Length: 450
Image (cartoon, rainbow, N blue to C red):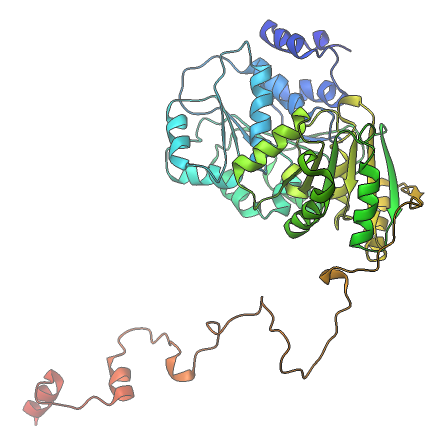
């Protein structure tokens, strides 16, 4: 099947020709007519199979020219980087269409975004937090939204956006088309669909958690952090094979720690992104990695979720992710657009349960490789790997930094508030034993009666 069979319009064909695309992917082929029909849609397909074009092609085909100021299509994504990427993809497809597209996200000047919204737009791509802020300011009117697209919804729920999503649903028009695409289907996502979608049609190209066949997976069993470093350095020396490498770690502190260790060996070839970095730094790091200025990118899960970077030769899981769905999203950064990709995972004994969960989701075992002879097995441990000694009665032991401070305590009985259901002047008088004086009106009234 070719794009000609989808009966698109000439401007879209011209844009696809410029991009060099002739054949739709399975998710694009199956989703086109369903999305174009106006039904609610839930699409499940592996990462790297063109889900953005799967929902944007039918939307752009049926989006008629309009001069109205309020947006008609809303696309929600979990991260700022994904906002930038989706806007770029829409602009590529709408190159020959008079369509106004805007991306908004937190961490930038909201007043600048308000001015851009006031100039009018057709398609709005946003993170949930900034969208809700703009809607509350009354600058952004959502009454004209006809289509709501939620991309990477499982990530939004992982990041705690559930309440913001529900609030956004409440201020959107009831008569709208809901479209959702994801690589994995979790219980939280299923509950959200049940609550807010109207008899959605489900399009599944593969069972949730099925990896792409063109991604080869292998695993190294490594005892500790510094041995992982030694293995990583040994592998990355081969820059012809490992020519564009994305390394995933569990959290921000680990990303910085790994970056410091690798910086000694790879200097200008290395860059890092996580949520503590400024927005400009993160976008610059991604751009340099895409352009090949940097060969190695260290990232946390959230930062690289959904990013479409061409020709990633290897994805290396420096830490085994706790949730198997995150592993699926990680390895989906390679092997995109039907290219070959390789995924490696470094796992310790403590991460054996996480590996079992990943293999259970994929219904396959990851082949184990022996450590190369040149890799030194280190005995040095980082603080998280050292055994924790519990001393019950040690007066000098460190206090728990996350424990409630002195401001958090129960109020004493005399200071606790009590709802008295009305006037409480007599209670106050009894509590503080105020003296009765001749200036007291009640006192004077009582004396007159006598």
